[in-house]
Length: 185
Image 1: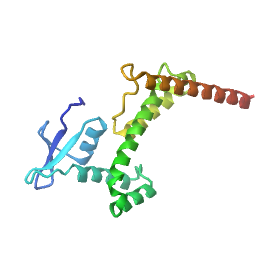
Image 2 (image 1 turned 120 degrees about the vertical axis):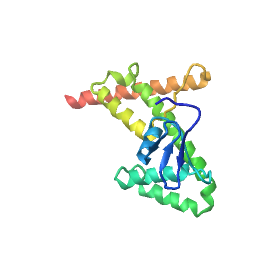
Image 3 (image 1 turned 135 degrees about the vertical axis):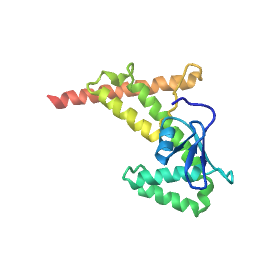
Image 4 (image 1 turned 120 degrees about the horizontal axis):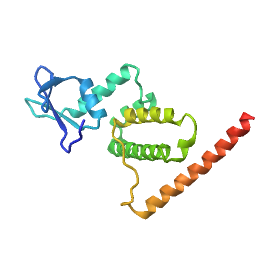
């Protein structure tokens, strides 16, 4: 699905049916979850009042996945979220969560770069299967939206740090391969 700068507008009718304004058809919560996994932003509004209902529907999608055993959020995290609604920390929780997920996307992107065809890990047997599993995991965790990583247009300091990190990973990988070789004998 092509990404656009405008979110996909979904209208909720009085009957609680959800209407996709781009394709002029009704959609389900699972359809909305698929749009999001494909990298599309959505906005859900009540047709009559114009109220933005996006947050409540996203929470409903998460609740349905959790209730089906597709647990991503540990009980202690859910408990802390409930506590944050009744405590002074409520103001910092949204910022903390947003920054945490951004850091997760960036680190996963860097990890995928290192596992790519030119990365140091690509020489190990079985890495292709691991890469496929990792891509599926990352897509599920990030909703299909991942950062692009470091580019030449960015500052030299970040690029140098990335090269140092890659060198550290290569060194650690060599040590692990050496240990595995010794264990195999």
